Image (cartoon, rainbow, N blue to C red; front, side, top):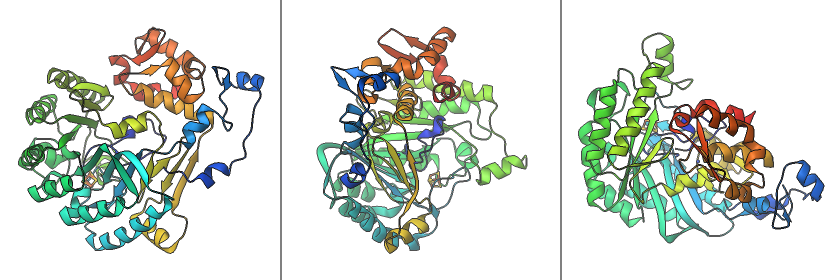
Length: 444
Ligand code: SF4
């Protein structure tokens, strides 16, 4: 699933049935509708924009920033909003037990794809939800056939689908392979029956084991989601989950703390005192144990919530973290053109009706100033263990990193939350653990 907002919390890219957000051929007419301004050199310096190789990087002029904003997207997200039931903690854009809407979804998706003026060549495609695997082998085949009328994956494209463990079968794996899928993000969440029960999941540990074995045997790359800080979960339970998932031979693991989202059944039970989250100190211990245990199993911790075996980082999510443009289709799906994030109407039925009746189906348009876009680059960039390289940041954002976040970085280095070798800034382990609390210093 893809739930973008300016909440820079750890679930900026959050799990549902499968992996991450899981978040354009931005039509030229949209891009040129803004009237270009051309600040002079002094104005550029006053506003903190950078002069690189004699070129002024302007917010709307012939600049690196503008070129970034107008680049053709090479990543596409497709939201599949169907689930068998709604898990108690989940507030994603989806419908549960409404398979009667699938036919209308296909019709609306076919129509939304006509937004693309021409075939788009892509490097990554991510089907999130909801539960894409809920469509079954035939439904997936049909959806991909529709998508490929407008999307042309490059030969080594990363194509991911999210899957619920109980949906995975040999037939599903074969259909996925035939559709060009290279990677499956599995909504495993835990390998302990008690934790799965407490999370209101409808699969068993054995479903997870069988699903991973089937997918690996088919030759697919497998990413597994794990949830920590679940009701009643202990530190030992977390360590057991990490050991169990690593023993399955998966290539990638995403780990998320349970969050108590407004309007969910879990939040309502918590308010009534019937369900309790983990204490903050336990949650921290769980996350630290996760980092250490996965490192010991050979997983590189490459982003706050993500761990990969060598060569298996998720290229699609790296598009989001690099703030590169991407396209998106489906209810609640957000696309980004380098400046503006447009989120489709969140309600599945609302999106379908609007698309099919030719009504504007954008639920939200969030346009960032160049400075806001640069601030977002700082936050998303520092979520990655690679951190931010000053020259690359300047080239991609048009701003000096120190102008945007210099004071905050100096404070973080002094407090041990970050390291800075003059060329690259990285959060330290301590910084990663409290990263959610740091971002306000950049965004202020
Ligand atoms: S499987 Fe559960 S957590 Fe995942 S999207 Fe569906 S309802 Fe949400």
